[in-house]
Length: 268
Image (tube, rainbow, N blue to C red; front, side):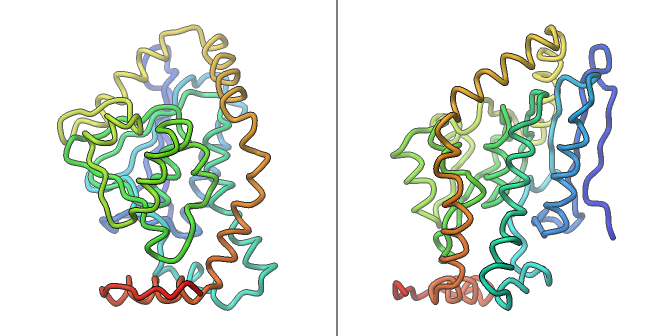
């Protein structure tokens, strides 16, 4: 089993910064089920880590993540699963984003190249996002006959409001440039290409210099207040995704994507 995730701790002021690097060395950093498990384990590895105040998550120089790997053998096996098995398998994504959102440490995404689908879902689960000016975001799920899952809709809603969330998710073929993402409020900082990680580390150093307990408690309070009602609808997330994945439109969307052609949706 290949390791897609590497963790480096003890950086910055008083050694309070950690870096998590996600790199599949495939140029696109797709999120296979195994990658989801490793990234979830990485987040959970900080649960009892009192020495770390800030965690910077980065991809490679060309991509933060291209989203879920539609070509992965385990991922493609979903089409053979019964509904019960499918629902269990679909919990991998929400489990990942929840693990990162609920970390006590402040989390910062350093985004270069492109951030697509599940990559966006992961990025919006973090506290801050820093993006290279030539990078872009895209949410292609609806274009694949699916819904935006992993409990991302509430998180995006908090960041950019209802209209922009609909625009980002429904207009699946449209790229969101770094400047647009900043104007909308999807990212907090845009920097020169190739400098997202450096800028994220500079922000991390500022956070790490603050009192750790006060920072952790403030994050917890803000998150609890902001997401207090989100859990009421979170159960629908997986079920909507499972239902959509059984549709003819989903099959058509995936086949069109893999065949590099325009899909023909029929609403069934």
